[in-house]
Length: 381
Ligand SMILES: Cc1ncc(COP(=O)(O)O)c(C=O)c1O
Image 1 (tube, helix red, strand yellow):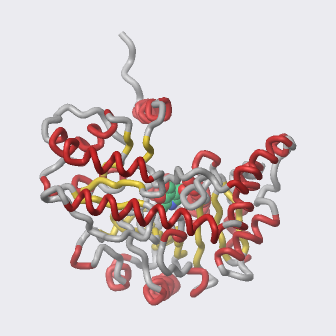
Image 2 (cartoon, rainbow, N blue to C red):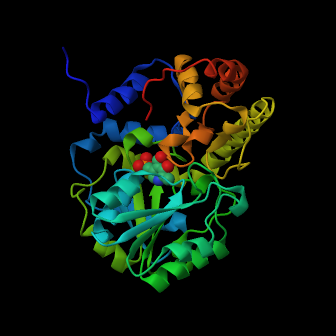
């Protein structure tokens, strides 16, 4: 008899099966599936044709890309470190600051992987609940102040929040940065979704010292599978964090060429992406509004996704996810983000071709009915 699969292999086979499904509609990971900007596509093809990938990139990223990232963020004087996805920027920061006896303070829901990195380094993770209309689904300075002290190594703020889609005001960011300064913590501002937000203030703009911004090219530019992101910080913090890197041989050359070209065409590209994204959100809102008990806690979201609350309709998120999976559509169950609130919602990506969202919406009434009949569900990740 074959031995049961380990948790890690079960998770891997889950994603492998999704990847192997021809024409899957990826509506679960906030990725961007709008056909690439022609200039970005051309930059990647040129890099391949030149064999540019035969050599390593500079360890901290091509200087021209580093400069373009800092200019795009609007933080002159700061330094950018190019990483293999935003996730590795966050891993590096956690490795630099977390250790036994420290705390890592974030919201619930949050993006879960940095919590894992903090724990791996020995820190205790503190999650402040924000899934609550009473606080408008956002962290308040009062709540943050009540959860930090001299042990706090990192305050990790996802803004716009994934999965809720709220974004913070300049005043709020200033308050969070002041609280971090007072307790001696590093404010890590995860700005992965900033390009989908109406009005966004990177913490580095209000507090150049004591804050780090993490960035991604996966969502706005659609480069998730190429693995490229960055962190941006003051020169002193940059040196501290760079000294902890494990990516000593740099990030993908092809990805860096694509990223730099993407920054050059960003206004043009994002106008197109955001137009589609807004229309997709409106379609989902309308379809959800036609089903008794479904609701949208934050609308419109400032990310390229919408959280749809299913609890009022008596629907189990996992059952809906499985029904859609059987139709070749991946959406996300809330428990991916939060054990405490995850049984209340699903999350649907919106930076995708409108035909995908139309199919999602057309199927919704039937999926809601079918989900009520499902009991035995395979594990989901
Ligand atoms: C909040 C947040 N930060 C970081 C990332 C990681 O992005 P990357 O693909 O650049 O590693 C994600 C991806 O889903 C995310 O949601």
